[in-house]
Image (cartoon, rainbow, N blue to C red; front, side, top):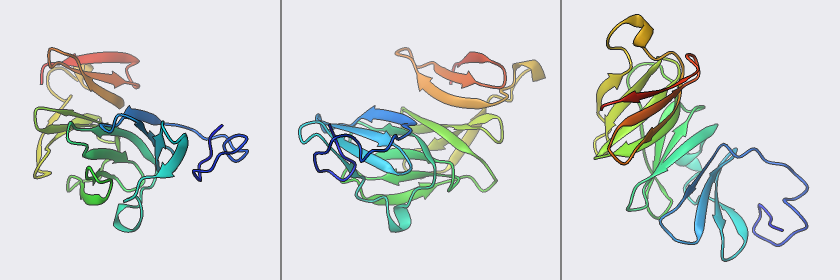
Length: 178
């Protein structure tokens, strides 16, 4: 049994928790969980601990999904903040990324130096430069209206570099060539 406070227990403090996302962190014995806050599950120590930087400027509100780059930097889709919140390899807050318009980031994926963010409100995938946070383009509005995204909820890349988007509004999984 594990405890959210890090001490062994007869369960998770008698509570059920809703996990919205999990990712294996670059540190081989850790998993990152998105709950009401980000939790790191230390496999060796068998405990949950809050992500070190998820307080103050890094305080999260409704984190839904997370992407982690090879260096350990974490990109969290924070619905409540309407931002992608960035935490460094040391788990401390670095910055937040957001366009100048209203949006609802629900998932994030990394590919070749870019962040691909499922934007539920604007019905697109927003593409940002990973380093600068500059908005580069939106995917999902080209072509005929029937081909537009409706409610993108998840984004992922396959080994060939194609972007796959789960579109809840269309009840489809859509493939894009970036």
